[in-house]
Image 1 (cartoon, rainbow, N blue to C red):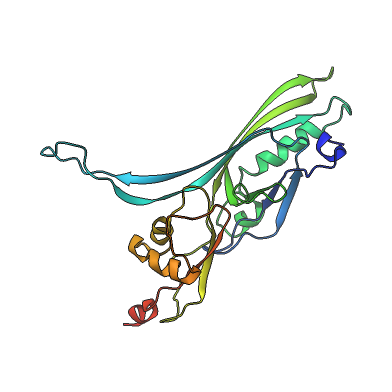
Image 2 (cartoon, one colour):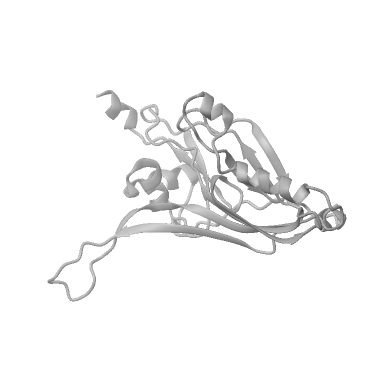
Length: 240
């Protein structure tokens, strides 16, 4: 039993799921669940923005940046594996589960749309680090071996990139204020960034502010769940 479980602490887990069958759908059924033997000592969460500048030879200072879009969250962590107490194959079995996240699933191959599994890192009540994503890299380093060459200890570096399940331009009803999707705020988020990602128009942030009763668009607390409404009048424009 892992130290995390012996001490009564919540064990971190990595869930592998069937990739969505269609664009915009949520992931399918669970393929595998890996309960981490040891909880991570550190988690690195990164989110980036993309800005564009048009240089001007006449400008005395650099040109003003133009916001292009918000990049996905990226979660990096190390998974420590140890079988020195049991001398079994659990280290290699765990590594094999992690490697499965980097190859197309049989079901996706059957649909002739190859895709690797979607994953979700889960650890208790943590929200900013728990999201649907895809594994972009797995690097396993074996550091101890049994007399027969069987790996007994390994450290696996894992990188997960956020995969959104929201689909822009969803045929909303004209004038409707119902939710098209929801979004959990992470550090660095702004309503303008969210409006750009959802509608392709950063100036539409007022729609989100109004739907959520937000008076100060710059004061967004991480972990807050926002309703992303359908744009008013969008349905009428599509039918025209």
